[in-house]
Image: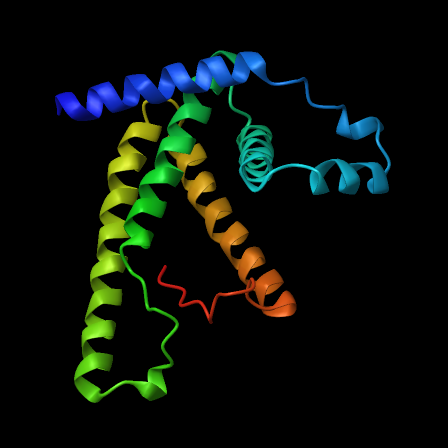
Length: 175
């Protein structure tokens, strides 16, 4: 517990000092599509990921109409929820093995793991629903989870069109 507190404090300090050193982001609304592409192309993968998360958070805040005084708390909780869900998903690695290359026992084990993963994600979602209810109304929480599902579907559709990233095999959707 103490280790987690120290780790969290370290990350917070790191984030605050990094944020203070960042150059201001350009106004995307006044940039052409080509200028936006060029700007994003020159970002590191970590910066691109942060930009994507920030944009998704702001879109969610607008969509849910989160009051201004609750937006920072909501963004932090939304990020924490995303990290928590990702940590659970990262436990399930299928090592890009085709289900046709598995023995029945291996396939059964993988299937059981996917059910376990789904249950862990559901349990985590329930925990965070309670936390979100301290900031949002029940209707907003429902809308948040519905939006999460829609975003996942869009990402899966886009991935199907573009194919998996280099070095990755097919993805199993567990939620």
